[in-house]
Image 1 (cartoon, protein in one colour):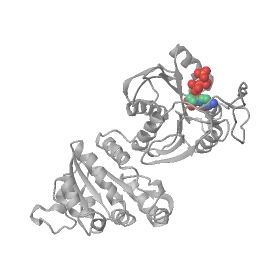
Image 2 (cartoon, protein in one colour):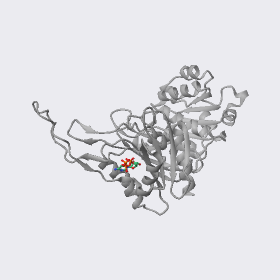
Image 3 (cartoon, rainbow, N blue to C red):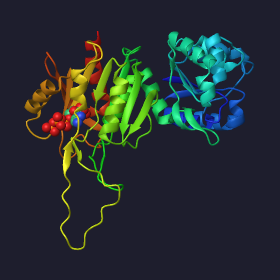
Length: 395
Ligand code: CTP
């Protein structure tokens, strides 16, 4: 596929080198079109060497080849990473002062913008209006990641992880529908931890991979995604707003808050059913030679059942997960009814199955419908199968 990588003048330009490599190493033909200011951060020889193609910023090079029209016309995808406030403004208003903005006007393929700038610039009404204009016209504008910015400040404005931008681009190139556009989706992921004392906790082995795949694929299908992540060590999926939590109480609070305005809630997190009835404020010491004190447990609220009971709109779709070792389907069916959800994704767990692996297989139980088998494959494929069923239910 022919990809145009537009790079505008922000410090995150160096991260676009990694994005470029991900494209070239997977066989894509990439033409890099930096702005003049981008070259102040990363020089022309770097782009030329990594892409194996000529690099120009102005419309005046190789004029006989009419590059200001040809590059955009011939592209299967244009991705601008990083996209500065300046380039978003120019694109929204159709300015065409250099090769990149000319390319954006002549491209008829999908366009992805990965903004990166300081929080104040991102949140400014002018930038937000430009982003809204671009989205209305069908461009995909990722939300920037939250974290450390240039200097000591932190906030929304970081370029999403290049591997995550790459995943979004692959999805766009695959031509899958953006059938969740305009939908608000909440996904919980990872596993909750219940503190015993300041250094110990009761936890579980959930890696968060399936929940993150659900968030990533929902964002790629156009949804506005809130990802409530319990103790997950993975890069933020591009385009998702990530809320980090630790305990079941924190997860419940975050999920119920976000669920208020959501069209869909997917509970992929492994939620601890029990917590220590009391949490010691100081580290529990081993008593000399004596028997350890037993840990008394208290039952946690069942968040999924709560969501099923109090849907904020009658059409809200609630999806649960179930990890089962025995009687997988019978237990799954009972759980679907008990928890009052619309879909229940049932995984069989055991050695090499489900936890921490990139692959998964599932049976999706559907309230009032036939079960759907999802064959073993990448967790993204399982996620897409879930979103297919959700999209059908949303109508
Ligand atoms: N879940 C939840 N709140 C809890 C426990 C689980 O919201 N306190 C959600 C999980 O996120 C998952 C689903 O419920 O979507 C299934 O969880 P699971 O622990 O498998 O079900 P249980 O009802 O705990 O049944 P059992 O432990 O008997 O298998």
